[in-house]
Image (tube, rainbow, N blue to C red; front, side, top):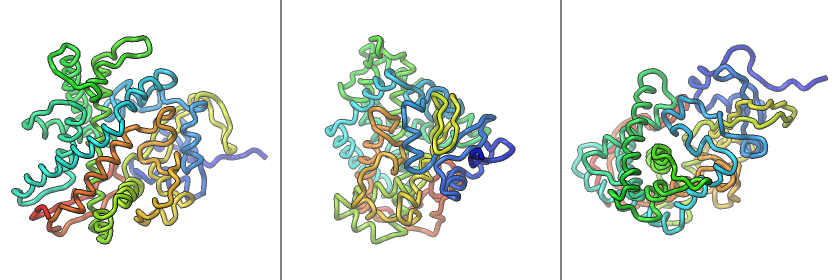
Length: 415
């Protein structure tokens, strides 16, 4: 008797993935304790992968590739076309080393300090405001911090404009209609802005410090010894700055966690170790990246399921971070779980999994952790406010998710 894989029957489920959001794959995989499930998306057969074993398969470079996997509507909004997320093989490894070179211990310490400085400056501004929406303000705070760290000049008068464009890029990939078109226009404006700066660095009109992201992207040479096309260098520089700005969502969720679990605030303020546990649990518990795509390089069979060459594959990021086979009481917020965590490559995957150098795990994960540690330490030690009545909940059908109120604060002061 032949094996019949678990699969959706009938119609294309593309609308379903937008409707169900983060839980689309989770409902199918975890309800049947599966690592693979077949569905139909964007008119083609697709395999959903979840859990530690599914994530490990997804990051198997002998079986999976990124070229041709990312839908055009995401490339034209979130990532940019032909960037590192779409590369494979030696060109990918060479480009990945460029990104990894930015994440030295010294550079990450500098990012922590820059982020802390911008919290101080932001708090001075917030004292004068009647109310502050943390998510919105964190977006501007991190835009300042990320650009300073990357060596990108940013005038005060353009901060909101640039940050709002980043927000459109980050939010637009999960939207349809006018908002998606706004996101594409924001991507075009941002690429043009950064490309002009790249050309200024190359032409000597803009001085850039060696080791900064803008210098390294401008001067990077490919395997043939050629500079990146100026627009491609701009796309990759945006791929350094944009994820740092997107951390504003985690900051808002971290504030929710401190409010809903008030005992956490003191632990975070008084322990460097617990600060790390808390940052990791925010990344695991709250929704961020929903899925990541790949395509198969060849025909093969795994867990009785027959993959065909060129087939679309999606790894369930949110579901894997909430898989009860990997995490005890996964729907409970518990930073202490990271005291004994072994640093697995395929269990905690909010920004991808696998090896940093060989796989498509985001090297910006290190930067994310430094930004979160600096932010949560500052929030727990220095941020004082009144919390008016509001909805701190969030929807798992909206991708990417954020607290509904954005975390509204009044009478913000420094303690």
